[in-house]
Image (cartoon, rainbow, N blue to C red; front, side, top):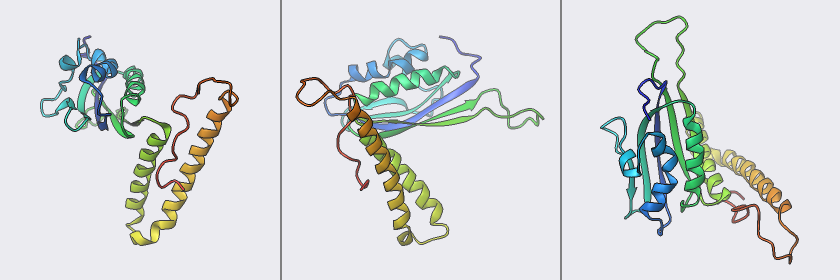
Length: 209
């Protein structure tokens, strides 16, 4: 599909740890929403970025890792493709991971002093993982890193244990609320039914005590 006049250059960046049994064919199918959006007929065809200096989309079979540093021209409708991709990658991920998406306004020119010229740049952080707990763990770790980096300008790192504990408390409450909501959807014990909540329960994320 031709997007020569696309309003955005969209950059996808992140590393996703994959299960050891994941094959290239499975990964190709999981990433189909984004390489198909780029007008490609396969992952191999669509894995090359718009910029030669970027490695594009790579499957590191030895490390069981999906590496993405890939740019494609597009519009707001690319967000739907990203949502589908993340749902697919949840089924293949070994651990939680963050994927950074940056929308660069292709029409905005920093050099021009336009009175009504405001960039439409946007940044989105998406998360994938085998369970809600794994996804929350990544969210928690990133938040702790950001908060600690900010507060270390004013306090010694050893003084921030209480702040980290409060962040853990917030994520624990969110995790418990999620588990409780999924419990409500479960059939009574002994009924032989499955768990409609999918990944739902599972182990509480690390550090979230």
